[in-house]
Image (cartoon, rainbow, N blue to C red; front, side):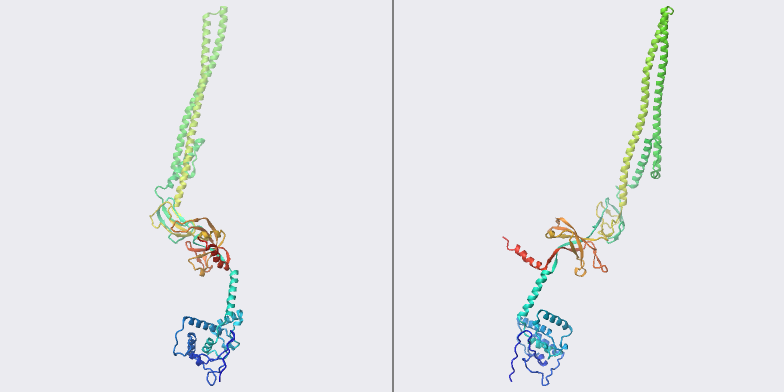
Length: 577
């Protein structure tokens, strides 16, 4: 009896299910034609497959073998045949996963359950016509007979037509284009840099230098502001504070003495200097008294001279009055003698004698009167010498006062310098920080003036990243832009990065002195915090760590990123001479 040939499937989804006995599936024989009866013996029941039989069926399907195990093997398949066989097997396996079994217990379980649900959902949403299996395409097969079902699927389902695949490709392409236009990505300028503290690393130096007497810290020591770092002995040529203090006290005591001399008052020495320098106080007091005694002696002599000249003036005035009186009387006698001579009562000799006396008195009076101005001038001259001596004393004292004031000013300045030098012998930390790069580690070692001794890295300060920006990106970077800092010491995908702001963009490029170095713009980014991660598991960032700075210059869609090379090629290509 001739069996009618099975009708070919008209479309994906019109598949005629077939029954494959277990022994045929294991043997690798092709399934019977559509419409054939059961091939499982008179009872019509399918034999149960063992685990070994299932593995043999899988091997027969995946290997593409059609004969029984251990039978003669044909020629090895070519590469294209192997690829096609693999694709066909993969497609038919997907069709089996997307099949809708009649009984729930026939559905794949375990690891195959979720992939099957995802595939069915994708199929129903995109292409409902792609359901290749009917309501119950595998109703004659049971879950234990997995090998038979898989073999039947692999040899029964045809490949899909191009139309459903084209729909899928076009749908995915349209979704991708819309997504490329809608989705935006940050546009960044990348700069490599180094982490530095906000307050910069403090370099410890000494102005005068010296010999190391004591070292209080080591590399890595954490110090507070004002903590001692190193003690130096100043060189021999440095200023002596004690000597300058004694010199200053002497000048202060000298000034007190000179003030007393100028004001003609008793000397009053300052208390602090008098306590520190009692010997100088006594010396200045003796000097004050000696100078005052010398002045008084000179003034006494000059005043005696003034008094003597005054007595001379008085004597001349008295003598002048006496001569004037005698002259007046002699003149009266001369008048009387003249009258007597005329009367013939007196001798002429007496008259001549009286007349001679009058003339003599006149001469004496004129001489005395001429001596009075000279005596007065001598008196004034003596008074002038007194005033001159006082003025000379004042000038001398004032000159010494000016010199003392100048010496005080100079000595005070030197004293301040000496105090600073003595204070600088103990070098203290200017900030809270960590010691690094110690260059003086030997007691008795010499520190030259101005040479770096150590460095202090600030603590408790926000960090900055000193980065090098490519000159090509300078036009897009401005102060105030946000930036993301990635620390090379910590994996960005695990710990994340730091947010920051651009606080400085150099006005000009910096050209390194190293060979083949490229110029760059210096950019400083201020970070929001000084650690990576959250508060519970934060990882501190220290100065010197390398960082990558991504400065956010704007946003662009994914489509703009994709077509930018094409636009750039259109504007720049095919123009060379």
